Length: 114
Image (cartoon, rainbow, N blue to C red; front, side, top):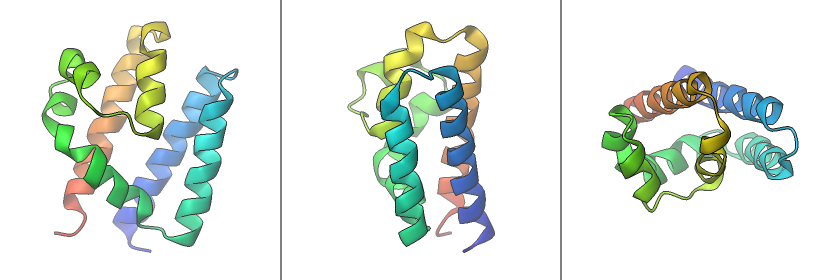
């Protein structure tokens, strides 16, 4: 596994663990985490490829932290959907952390395949 893919997958896993701790009653986040672990054990590049395909097209709203564009986007993939669902319950610090993680994942995905 390339160091970039390893870093991407670890950051996703860390983010999922944070969301599980922050929203312990949301069983779907645990299911998303389990699916992530299974898929990356079978194909370590699957997560970064899916991110590039489904999330990267919305890079401008992620980079600019544009909530309006983010929420009106058709982006409704797994963990992104859960972030949107819980956004209103997040404190400002958690929202900022979510943007930071998405921006980091975006940067890593853009480096992949260069």
